[in-house]
Amino acid sequence: MINTISALQQHLNERLGAKIQRSKIAFDELTIEVKATYFLDVAAQLRDNPLVPFDQLIDLCGVDYLGYGDVEWETKTESFSRGVSENSSARFDFDRTSGSVDYDGKRFAVVVHLLSIPNNLRLRLITFCEDNDFPNVDTLVNVWSSANWYEREAFDLYGILFNDHPDLRRILTDYGFVGHPFRKDFPLIGHVEMRYDEDKQRVVYEPVTIEPRVLTPRIIRDDQRFSAADEVSE
Image 1 (cartoon, helix red, strand yellow):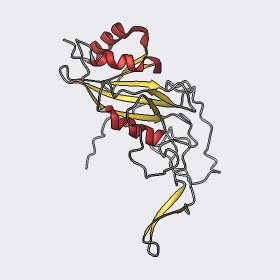
Image 2 (cartoon, helix red, strand yellow; image 1 turned 60 degrees about the vertical axis):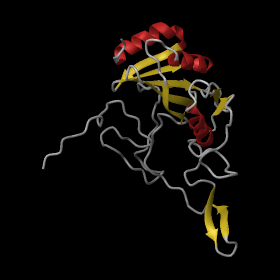
Image 3 (tube, helix red, strand yellow; image 1 turned 90 degrees about the vertical axis):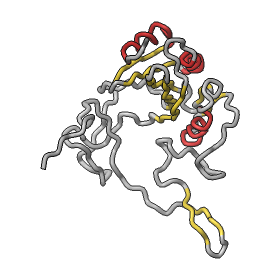
Image 4 (cartoon, rainbow, N blue to C red; image 1 turned 180 degrees about the horizontal axis):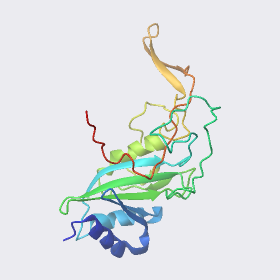
């Protein structure tokens, strides 16, 4: 009976072999990464695994790694820094190759969270889209039907296409929405703003009037300084 994360990692490494690019345990969770060409095949094997059947897909999402590891303000000594000026003397260029983060330049990824109900084990499955300009992977709808709306959400927010999806339409944004709002190069203020027009008695769209400003920079930490709740004494 496989009922521990370490046993699961060893079992999947033996069963899937070279199809696994990376396998890592962190915070008592196992994450495996596979190439997009093996994504559908590995998913089917995980579902039909006789020893650890991952019979339920509980989540699927997209990730945009554009600018991953890039920060503009020094954040090593404080919990968070807040930038308010683009000309701040505290800005610096971060070398993304100096950390322990695995990053190979591929921009979009699909992350799947699976649950094995009989074994009470969870697994995170990741694949990177090979094409940064036209990101696409095979749909998992025929493996787990619950992937349907999750994949539509990833398409809507990130523009990731799922090959052979039965009904790949936007699911969250409005009709005629232009762009994909969770992409890192999508402006935080958006392209248009909406309001209700009393004269026309309908919602109208107008060019956005908000001016962009610098907020909290992206921060990547590997020291886990905030992984456990601190005890506060009064």
